[in-house]
Image (tube, rainbow, N blue to C red; front, side, top):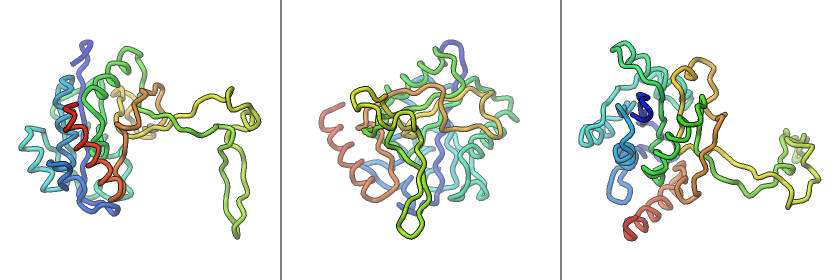
Length: 237
């Protein structure tokens, strides 16, 4: 709890993964991948409850070891195409039927194991103090906004339109900075989480260093995260 707000952490960890099969329970720098997020959530010390939504039996074993509450996810919500919003609403529906209600929901994806408990605390506190509906961790992107294009390729030719035409010819020194939602921490007011909510369009961005935000989609990402965690452990930080 913080500022008298009841806060729930949701850690989604389904069994299926095409890029890295079974990644949520694979050993990473000495621990199953999901346990890095379990530990960060527990160490944050802000949560009234931490829930793992999963259909993975090995993740369930890890959650029980860490005294993390488990909600078994139905197979229909454990597909590659399942929107994360549906997973969150499933958890909230089940908890609220038990009269467990929360003011804020924090989404912590296991695929961001470099995110720390301090990152979580910073995001939650800033979101609550700023009184926004949706906050998310972000990192800066070394791209000039005026050079961003969308288009459709036809026979090797891209028919484009500018995303920010008014910035197309601005001097590099005068161009605004660009940021991307990195997936490490999301903070939502409960009332925001309804059908149609846009999870990746935050009102507030919490800037995190790139070294804390690598997301695991591939085996290369997995190995990079492992090396980073081992270096961090050696430094004792």
